[in-house]
Image (cartoon, rainbow over all chains, first blue to last red; front, side, top):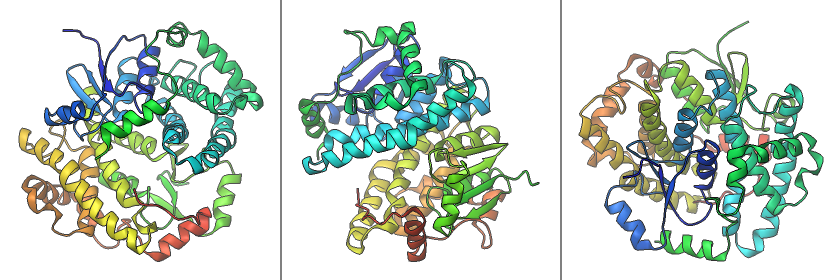
Length: 222
Length: 229
């Protein structure tokens, strides 16, 4: 039996993608089980794997963990990506929660009704450029360090890197007003574990397409 | 200058209520500044106090903390309500994630139309009784201890009590199929700091009313219709 964490989710980004990023950034290999049918999902529930009947599910260190934030906090804590003390953890939590709010908009985007897609895309662009990116641009400018918190690579850096790339897929050139973030993106891309994750053949999932949306609706629809 | 934490929010529950509960449970006195006008909010924004332009905001230990979950995690850790190790923290985080999702259905309730409110009430009760309460009922039954995690009072217990009371406000007999939770509710309610918080005159806020909804809409200029889940 493998000691590697095992991820159960659909074969796509969704709520599992930030977990894949974090494990990869920490240099942790993992296995994946993909939900393709409603029956698979119902069996997981019946067999008592899903505490609140939901995925993501990550089997790690003898636990069947659910709730994305709980899983990420555990991984960050275990692999020293959560700062050195309570105050650094507070900063990381604030940054990660903010980024997560932005990512939520991207998460929901493929499920928008067709007549709302333009508006939602505009909202993503507006929030990224007026609310979220300026904060991290300023943080990096003010301390002049490579990483967001405590001059050390952390969960916050991974999450920001993921968000930058995800927004760029929707709004090319979105970093044009953010020189610090451009440098940050390059630095993160060159970190060995992240560089590996960004290469073809890694567990990184592609942007959600129609097939992904169909699978989600099929597996979870009542 | 006071060293008490200071909470910036509307004079009502919303996302700040869980923070009030946790501070109270930890026996920590706090001050509050209530947002009543758009001007107050804009002043906070211009002053750079709101990292992502949002409240809740809590001034604590020299930080202007935002993001409810970050604030709650900080308080829980600082006041030893976060378990004794990484695995207990993981359990607490999972349980709190569940009660947070449940309370999320209630958070938007005051902003819904009358018709949507009825549907949402039914949804809240259904989720509580079929998805969330059974989990905590089983946890308590399986280990037979007083508290959810590690035989020690934690954030998870405070959050669950808050959720139970909020759902009961929507359906008073919702705990009828959950004997463990009934006992849990009685037990946690009688902890001195919690008992005090549950008494009139505490900083616990009442069920949100129309005045609260108007204030939030006015201050945030949030005039769009809120849809049910």
